[in-house]
Amino acid sequence: MNKYIGVLTSGGDCPGLNAAIRGVGKAAQGSFGMEVIGFRDGFRGLLENRTIRLDRADLAGILTLGGTILGTSRDKPNRMQVGDKMIDATKAIIENYERHHLDALVCIGGGGTQKNALHLKENGLNIITLPKTIDNDVAMTDVTFGFDTALGIATGAIDRLHSTAHSHHRIVVVEIMGHRAGWLALGAGIAGGADVILLPEIPYDLEKVAKAIRHRSRTGKPFSIVAVAEGAMDIANAKELRLLEKKKASVKNKAEKNKVKAALTDFYARHSGNTLRLAKELERLTRLESRLTILGYVQRGGTPSAQDRILATRLGTACADLINESKFGVMVAARGDGAEPIPLEQVAGKRKIVPVDHPWVESARHVGTSMGD
Ligand code: F6P
Image 1: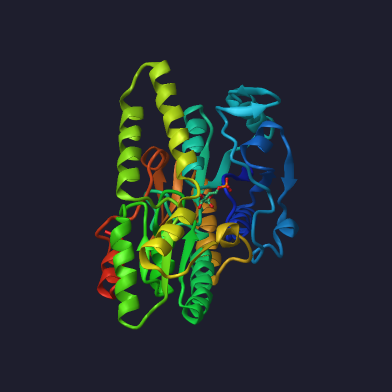
Image 2 (image 1 turned 90 degrees about the vertical axis):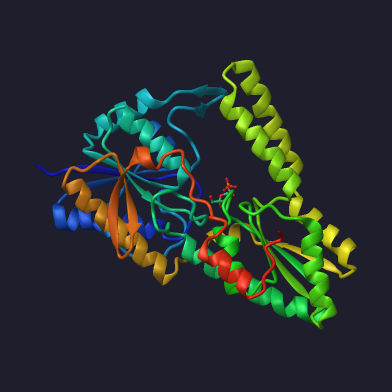
């Protein structure tokens, strides 16, 4: 009997999602004669039973497309806003899975999706996931697709910022995405030759950043590029956040937990606009004119790089192989040139951040880049 599989994309979009959908779909249909159906807008489409055909013809011509033909959302099966209510949609989602006689559901997403996938696995569904995100912060995989393309975009942007910073003798602070991981800022900072790289994993000392820039200025380079990960913060803020998170993990009582959650929301509200403040402070401390560029969503858009197309295709086809072998409850991780199934329990709730002694960090330091510490 042919197998029926569903596919959805969930979380922030990234380049390579369509290549992955195509990889799963073409291999599932072409090599194993499976029937494939897509669900629109992540777990919400699965709840609302909004589907899209993914026959061979529907999969043609999408390899190079950015975004996701399925649409995406950040909805969670166990906590979904429906009208003005927050509901647990797990039961209704299971009913729709059964209505389509699915043998497996492929969830393509980042860290949040791995958690949601584990939740559905624990509720009896045959789930298999693929790791995507420009942030490269999914645990247990060498790399996620989307990262290489975003790295290229951010590096290209730094290259362009270099010539304008140089011409005007300015500091250019460039904010790079990555959520609470510094992979993208670190990679683009190294590839683009940033003079300072600030990461969430290495809290910075503002005075030391200013000192590095003043030193450049004194030695004939009155311009600097500061590549800042969106989650980077100074030592005091990083300490406050660590304490709040520790508290959140340790408090048991609901009222106390809500209090800590409110404190965290307040913390992030205060932290927003951090890069603009950093640019202004550096101007004050160095007396060099300073400008801020936030790269934002441009890093997530457009056609995937060749690397991401290959990675997404390779993980997508490996996913079809695993479904054929009835191997479920796993994420298809990139391992060297191959792919490896990793139990969702080992992935969900974990985040791959930059080790402070990672070879990329060491290399950046060796070429004289300040890490702000
Ligand atoms: O996870 C990808 C990412 O682009 C992060 O780098 C960024 O912090 C976040 O998504 C932005 O999320 P949203 O699309 O919900 O604004």
